[in-house]
Length: 360
Image (tube, rainbow, N blue to C red; front, side):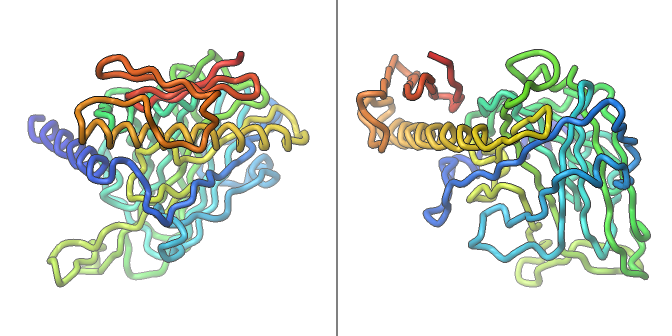
């Protein structure tokens, strides 16, 4: 047990070190343009059987995310294999489906809460209230093993992963189209289904129960893919002869992060929930406008981090494209709150990177 705790501490330290080195900021080549997906509600009659088989009528008529990119964005090569993802919901569950094309089906980790990203996996990140704090991460592999955890806040802000947080009554299904862990043939794909109860997700949201029409969440999806070799009829990670260590894994995501760091919720995409098939143009337009303001506030957060690192204090003088007449920066000792009000909304960000808004 002590070895496991030491490893978890080391893992958290590595994530924190990466965040500190980069200051949680993207490269100059990164352009903030979060993806948006409309998550449609299904009727109680449109039941989904969680078995990994995506032939349910609801999935056949659903909209799908069909394009993933490298975690760093378009500056990196396109993913080697196709992935598609969809989400639906009803009064009881959020449903997530994924289809991952894969010529080499490989998974050996078979115990709950193992660090699945050390092998090929599919990952879900959900921040229901969009404040970038208290968000969920769910990983699953081709053996149907799950690692679910809660992050109090991003590692860069000294957030802690809570592995003991489990999704009670999580439904999961995986189907392999090929032979798992058998290098003697070429496989086709594996598919995933998840059903997450609102009774768990409401713990991370600003209200109880399922979403309301027009609700917006921050979310992202990631596929971790390792280069493989075959030795004695077993898959092994491909080793770089220059370093004698495995090549770094590929990280293919829905909404690019700009750096190799999934725990940067501000660069995740946006889910907009719809309780009926209706015109969502207004909701999409509002989401884009709000995300633009939140992103500009995030730049002020980055500036404050840099200023504090150099001077040991925060400042009320920052460079911004936001209207100064609508901006209020309050610094109190080692804390600050920045407020920006526009179009009957006030947006906030503080020294811990938490972002939120209120109606005027």
